Length: 120
Image (cartoon, rainbow, N blue to C red; front, top):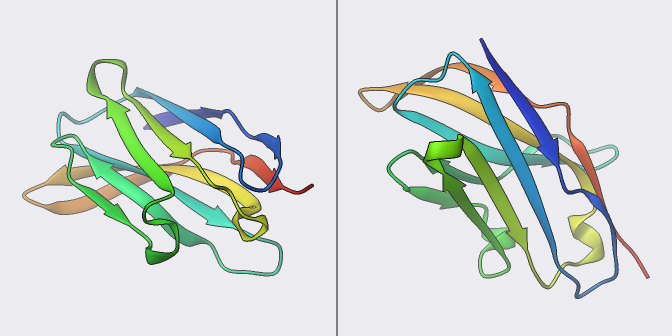
């Protein structure tokens, strides 16, 4: 079992920046994928970005060029650097962890979520 602790959410004005952090602990595989998903009120949870231990990344089209995912493998921590934020980025952001073996993901865990509100 893997535990995830998120931090860094808050209120920011349009055009502002924010960085989210997610620290993983527990039974962590040497090969894994961590990422961020978000859920706005009345909407389904959607992918924001993911990154593997090999630093392969995947982004939703809506955030490319504005949000950047990174990780510190030694600290088992993933970050989401958010720039040029828009009101439509307002959502609860969830961290997700998945084990990887031969390119197949299994055994996922979710964080508790952190609120990001973009408003003037």
